[in-house]
Length: 83
Image 1 (cartoon, rainbow, N blue to C red):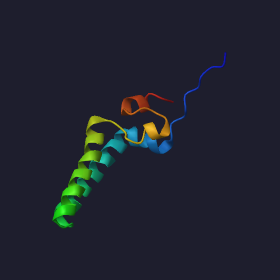
Image 2 (cartoon, one colour):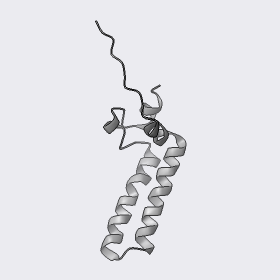
Image 3 (cartoon, rainbow, N blue to C red):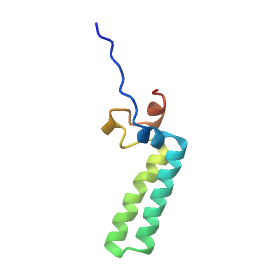
Image 4 (tube, rainbow, N blue to C red):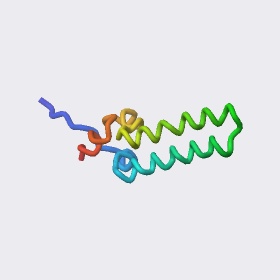
């Protein structure tokens, strides 16, 4: 019987699941919100502010939206647990 091997984690995904990646997502989310508040006109600003909440939530709650696209887990702790 062949032994099942888990896929290796993409270096970008590994970084995004790290502490530095979580901080980066939060900072990028804040930048998107600030762009929406100070740069874009009314209907587009609301959309940009809503989009900015997604990376903030991903950083705060430790999930990675790109993880499942690369065949690894959704939660940061699961991604960090892989070798």
